[in-house]
Length: 167
Image (cartoon, rainbow, N blue to C red):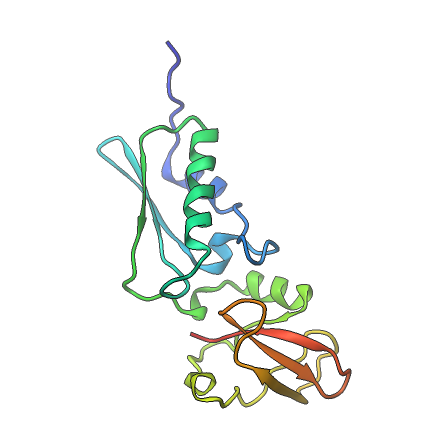
């Protein structure tokens, strides 16, 4: 009879924090701020995640990847819990995630703001081009490659790019 390995919540957090975002694989679910908590309750691991927005299509992939990682580490008693309150915000993204987004060619959300202007067809005051660093950019579409991103064009280098919307 095999014994289920014993892990503390810190070790579980560490291996779960390596799971990549399915839509932007250069950042992890922990860097994105979706992975909220890992706790042990009555011999069951409870993993809490928060969607980036209501109806986020990546949630199923987040759950499946978490389940696979736990099973890979021979953890059989677990629950993946999705919580909507408090609502996820781009302020939960780590600086490392913002840097990785920029290096990947996606303008990171402007830190410390919940820019509601994008909801009313007004782009943020200045979105820096991740290619050349210019602030001379223009909103092309409220929707980029995914619903959480807007499409911009740089008027300096003429390159299109996604901007990760502030929420």
